[in-house]
Figure: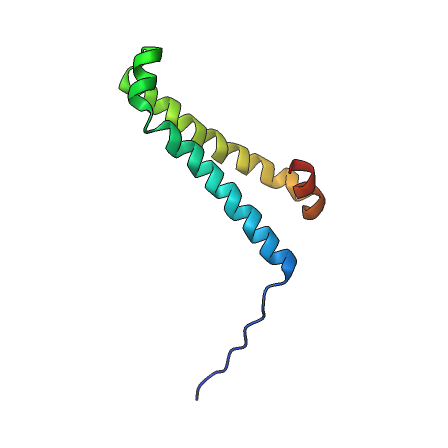
Length: 88
């Protein structure tokens, strides 16, 4: 017996939220990926050791992860649409 599945199309609002999340993720990765290739120039101009530069590059990812965990509990108290518009 073959089970039939029906797909429910996304609403316009759901597509908009997915687009916003995708653009946010793209900007986070872009920020991270722009700093890493400039490592040689930044290390020379700021007199950084490779370990110090590695810490500087990873500090952004660590802070984004921690702030995401802390913000999740706070954001659950409010309407998602209003919160998204406020931080836009």
